[in-house]
Image 1 (cartoon, one colour):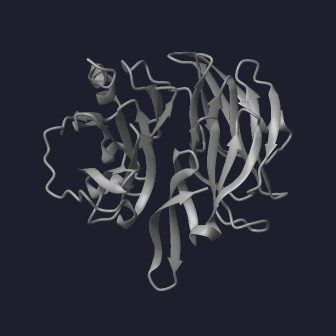
Image 2 (cartoon, helix red, strand yellow):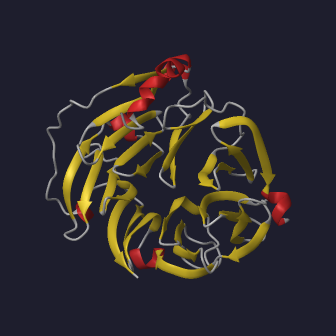
Length: 350
């Protein structure tokens, strides 16, 4: 029994929160766009990189699903159809070893084993018990996967389904969940608070106020990652218009450094970490530049500048995934005054 299968042990707990477990692993897909060029895929909205292959989620009504791309040939080699509602609105991808988790704003959590192709709906919060604005979001860190949900609130790890944490009820969304030094840290957006717990021992939760720690009273904590014993939190200030990464010692919770960022724009997504480099995407900047993908070297604790600009691709970059040194894929939007915004996928070099 693997760690994901052990979730069945928590069926009673899930039932108490309005959840059901559904096994749809035997479901057969009839539409398989094998051989398509990945860049021809309509409405790409989220990216991951697993087992040396690119994972692209498409929200297009006619091609809704998870597409596996061979980056050497840039072609789709496998496809998993998803219900249109399961990819509606805001949704996230998280990778763990050879599996992929897909969570949507419709609070459906699906696991796909990329080796066997088996698929299982792990969690489905009933609409009657959950407001339409609620989300279930997966986060992966150091080989562990955590789930954060709102209405009902809970936070848990996908292992043996340990008791979920009910004491965290932030007024705003969680923007990051990472592990460091045996502890689990959650970041909260506009309040810029960090919640630290020795999960699954959830009896005590420490809170760190980044506003107080950094001296910036109105900063937003928009993304977080961990690396070599430190926490890295993207802080966004509206006035004056600036952005930096706060480096916090994960053990002492002391502020170690502020890394100034080139891109002052609000970032989109949680960013991707590869080989000690954290890649963050930013929308068009109001005063300095056109935004884009900025690389932060977490070892030297310096910004390496903009690697792919919004001006270069001709739109606002929403996600970027590195697949090899100097190579990656971006999703971006191009607005049309008549038809609205179009989502595109492009392979880039830098």
